[in-house]
Image (cartoon, rainbow, N blue to C red; front, side, top):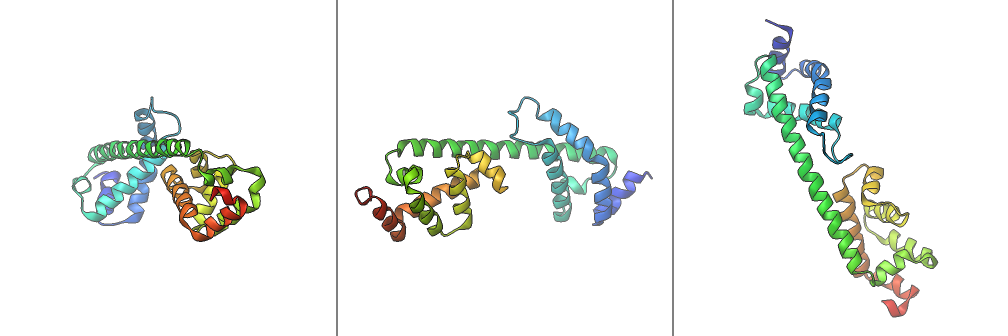
Length: 201
């Protein structure tokens, strides 16, 4: 019986050491496979190394749940086959998530363009209202909202803010949207706006 077959057997029994050995052996192979599968995709949407790592964690979760893919593992050939299936699943899931985030970002940009005369957009963008802007930001109930708004005011795009905050573009978009909703509906925020420009409130 080969070493890989022994490791698979131990892995199926729940050995984290065996799983780590299999991952260390095959991770470079999975990164190369993910890179080949991602050729032609827009740069930066999916990272081959991230796809490969997620593939192995999905293998571990499948084994922990007694999923059919992991249960059928017996040798090197079956392991490579399962990893290929999981890699495709991770790439497809990543593409769906990326496309969803892009759609959300486009909708947000469109909504902001349509509300260009919104007084809240005006106060956020007015250089002479820095004190009011900072007061509005401090009124926001969540730290994520505060961080997203501050990065937005610095001119960062949603994608840049997401990288800075180590979160998804969708999270950035939603945080900014909820911050605007709070500023439009909170009595304290509306009072701050009125103090800056009573006619705009």
